[in-house]
Length: 529
Image (cartoon, rainbow, N blue to C red; front, side):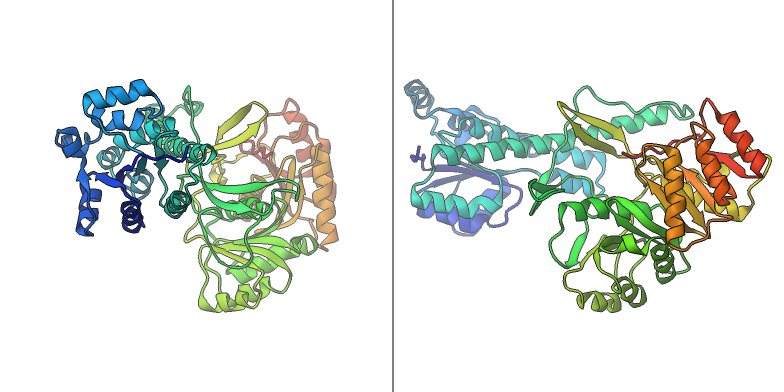
């Protein structure tokens, strides 16, 4: 398995590290064959290189769309060099076999992320490259497929050691197929997204129209960060990046601090998505993917102090997300207690200097906020399958409220109800969020009973020394009975926002009216599991 035909085909878009690698191949006695710009680069560096057109006897045509799709190329890539009949066929056709393929693909994902138009994206779909990679990967016993410039040094070492074993070749083949699968998945998702956008345009006015899900759906990621462990130390884990450039913890820059853990990534994602909901300065403190406290303020410092007041005990060791660039005052406040991660769009020099005094604190800067209304598919694995759904991009504003009680909420109350329901949207179900003056007072998260969520939110506020009388409450789903509402009424809550839709809505509304409570329906549930 160590024998390699001393003929290499090189055709790369990413030319990083190619010249020294090609020079090493020449030193090993390889004949180099290449295409277009790759051939010109190698020739300019003084390396002996033949052109694919000389091998095929046919020029590149259709603006370069057809270069390597020829039997003289694919015969050399697909011939099993241990098969006498294959060798005889090659000899009869005058085809020389290859022993090494070095190909990476047109930068489709980068082109798309750069906002290129449809025609440019189409021209950046590679055809010949994937065909060659797949051919050599199938025939990896005879042809080594190399599709990642980071593998060049390893290939040189294996050639020097004569260590191209069956296992090593299989590893390169597996990586090659994963590479082309990811590439095709990116293109497929793009085209499916365009089709869905066209469908949505044709369905405008039909609020009940569901997004179309294709018969086959591919997801792809590239290893971004190996993690020490998963949710627990006995679980292994890693972060994979998708082609999506949504601002957040996966795409942000780690400015300082220890490497991020699985739980850091999960919690920071939840925190940043939450603060991205708000236009005013906002801070969210997250623990185990649930908010300990969320608040708006005139500035981040004020928002942080009010968010911390909701549950200072749970905030210890938490994640802090901000929707504005960090300054020195908020950085100083954040570092007064142990904080695992701070994530924000940016940070000024004063803030960075403060955080630098806490070298273990992880500071992640995203450059911008996430768009809470941007469409995206979310995926969750279950045994034997994947659950796929669109992002919960619904956020009711005050104009969307339907008042169902005699008591009408005033403008201040409406604003607090909007804030409360946006917080509840990001809390694990069942959820009750208590809010006053644009800050959470108590949050009841993840309870099996909605009445238990109400009692928990009330108790958490009491533990923090916060008075909930006159506060508003948000429920992520309807009240199945009046008991959950009754608990809020007894605590002195003045207004409630909920989706409505229970068989007992009239009973719940009657209880609100009897207590002089204002209640609004949104018609939109926000379960989060």
